Length: 198
Length: 198
Image 1 (cartoon, one colour):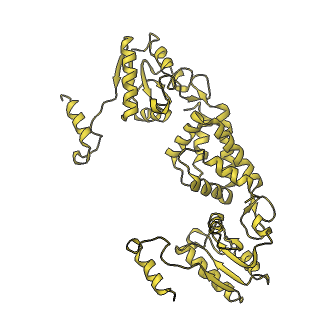
Image 2 (cartoon, each protein chain N blue to C red):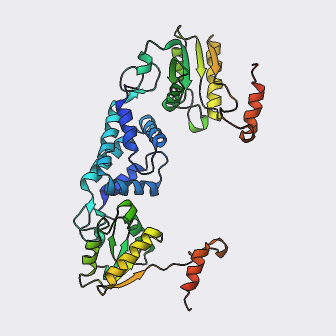
Image 3 (tube, chains in turn red, green):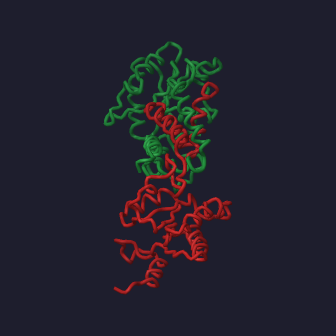
């Protein structure tokens, strides 16, 4: 409809959100205009604020509003341990375990040559200089256990070992709480290979 | 993380979109900040523009930026036919069929007493005065064929028939292109009851 440029523009803009197709975008636009104009105002403000303020931590690459993120500035963390994750979300998951007290480096992606994502796009140069600063002694690779994540871990591992840095990888095995009957065969095979003496 | 107020505010605001939970909101926020800041700016602008400009057509209740929507202002439409839909999306679907040349009334919802949506919330008073303006001779009910939509259609039908307006409902039956084997029994039963002499 010709008289609805603002509504069409909103529906179009919502489609730029990941995973949102034309039907969802239309539903969202109608919902916000009909039932939650205050929410729409809030979202508009939050978007422009975030675009304005959020940048990357100069040390670990995660999102932050300062030069360095809160974690990198925390002198209480173990400075010789560096955990490499693909995304800030993965980093938050590891923080939630309370099982890790070191620092982080966030790649903001994983190697995927077919999508044009090479070593440069995931900041590997920055990771190398960070890991070889003389303080870091061990790099823990916590990339995903899918093809891209494994390839990324392998590539980083080779590069860092060549520079004399100790590299480790999150353990693979049967998930906590899992019943063997329902675990996939590949995972059980890996858990057998990596079995530990108790 | 304390240094990330803008990022948290964005994730929170994204959760006000319908169907978006915490994980999706986080993923959207990261994606927009990492890969599409221009899209985030556009969405921010589109939201505030739409909140500012979009209102309801005074005649048919759909979204528009003018006093009357383009359809209501179109003198070429059949003025005596009024089609009642639940949402502007449903109205667009009917327009796409090119099988209807009359005007519309958009309820912006359907009766749902348990959710506190009564006759007033879906503008039934406005519909009654619109349908009894002396020009409209037939009201076509195009609410959904679920419980709420059927109840809404029944309620409107009773009210309008009491005022001497002819009321019709979209036909129920087997969808075009459907193979009987895969159509639900209720639909086939209804199609049998409503069978037409050819």
